[in-house]
Length: 131
Image (cartoon, rainbow, N blue to C red; front, side):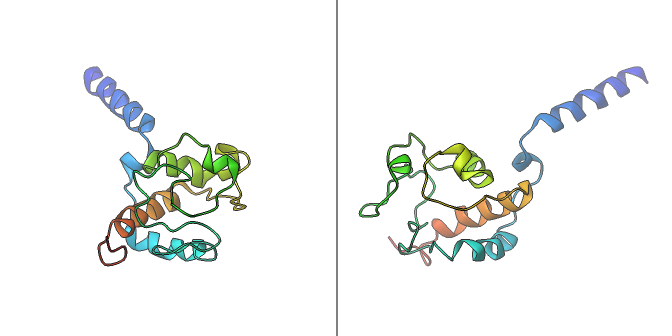
């Protein structure tokens, strides 16, 4: 019985130490609704006030050709993936001081996971983002 309790404690400790995305993967359907907030400045297929999101995953920050980035973003040594997006979306100016993105961030971890799941799916879609 003691062995089972110790095992349960170890499993629980391991789960608590995992990133939220490993416990509760993002839901792209909910993420699409969250993306509506981003559309004031961003679009998938074209630049607006902010750069387009097509091809976002694996792209270097400040890497959309022809888009005029803030010096902070243009000089950032960041490649966008789920982890870097999660950190940035939680606190854009905290992760990248000097960024022109004047958004306060998304405090809710699950909302960030949902948005990232949708961005991953939509930014790689040949329908939404033709080659």
